[in-house]
Image (cartoon, rainbow, N blue to C red):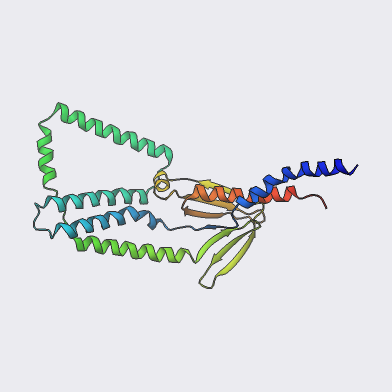
Length: 251
């Protein structure tokens, strides 16, 4: 009569293995940091560094006819303009598609215009040739240094105010003396919002809304980088906790 009970217990063991495996794969804690929007200016920072390196090796700017220096300045201004537009406005999915088709329509219209009215192209070219912005390597090194210093300060400041998700609790670390607030996490509700397509493309960032079960107010974290990875890790952690609790045998 003892053998059937041993066989039954052996059959029950594999059923509990997925819960242990899920618990092993789940992270022990997840750090959530909300960054300021200034971090989205990193393309401008990279463009300034690239222009500074190029002009450092290209030599000093001689006159307005220096085509290489002018091209570097125009490319930098283009990156800066696009970066400021991304920083200043929100572009949801529908708006981004509308702007894409609008830009495509403008480009096609210009191609057709120059195709049927070729005499207009020399006039436009003459006007564009007068546009030659110039800046030396010192200017771009200075701008890159300012942006780099701001990035460093922002990175240091946000690490004094961050959230930590654990299997049983949600912790808020803030202040220079590491003040700590605790919230219950087992029944934590998570909502993810991606309100700007271009900000998502730059840092895979978005808004994360945390709603603890015993709190009336929601916790809103904007500009959380790699938001997809963070959300999946939190879901996996809390899911593994629920599997562990449900797999425990009755006492």
